[in-house]
Image 1: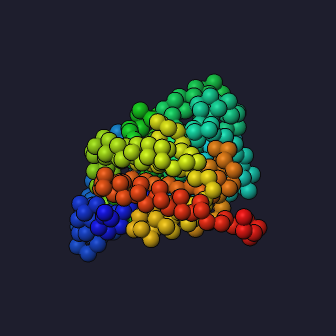
Image 2: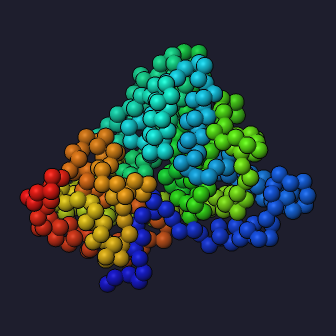
Image 3: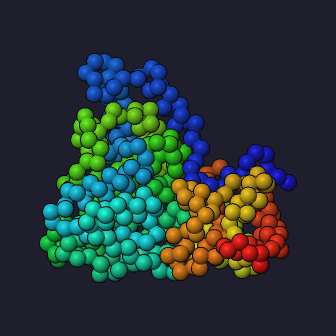
Length: 399
């Protein structure tokens, strides 16, 4: 029996806003609407909300409030972190280390810096999509100024050993007697993984509001005190001169409330999603032949399922599921309009043909067992039907 409404399984793409988040935001659109830089009481009311939101985020990350910078999203936070450190340390070196499976917000920023004379090492991943700390250590040179490795992969869900990578970065920096900040894109990890920066050992960390049932267009960049950093956006000197522009108070309140709630429910949400995730993985592995699980089998985000199916492309799978009332993805939502195979799956060593047959299912706190039953029923039959159809090669010939 089909569930009522859409079965939404694309929470890695975005999430619906939590009602308590919307409620917290509403007063700052039309009642407490002041500019927090203004000295009058209307402005100071907004300033109080800004300070309170910053304290709320700092409590989750276990850091100082002044180490929190509010941004316009996770992409901006990644850009700010990479540009900010690279330019601040350009007189001491021009070498950046990242991985081949990063989000495009990191990869494209690094690629742009290459056009400006920077050198970038794109570390390969193992068959499960994981970066090994030893590889990071070996890649650091006397000219390295930044290491940026994502926490949980947005496509395949693999969780990188961030604390261990942080340790080797600090050890190698000490041996070379130089400053090498370590940044992690933790956008997909919020609400599922530990965000205590003391445990992670990172110097910079990026977060996004709309991945945690908060508002779109909001982000957070943690910058550890004394980390070399130059602002990307210049102007009025807001955010302690690290990100200029009048603060988006409704959005900032929203992301702070969303992060606090997501972290408070983290263990409960993770257990709920992981149980559903494991059911999906077990069923597909057992009942759909020539299917391949992408990402680490255990060290993966609790809500992430990613499979490649031989003999079928991802787009017709998505369209078939959509017609059945199921919303899913073939990979990163930011590049889902592209017909190119996923750069993440190619980095795992998959052929372009197999990589095009990928499906990402990302669960959320409100998904149910009944919805999973419905998904598995529809998906199993759909893949079988699509495999019986003639396929069209990239040259246009029917095979």
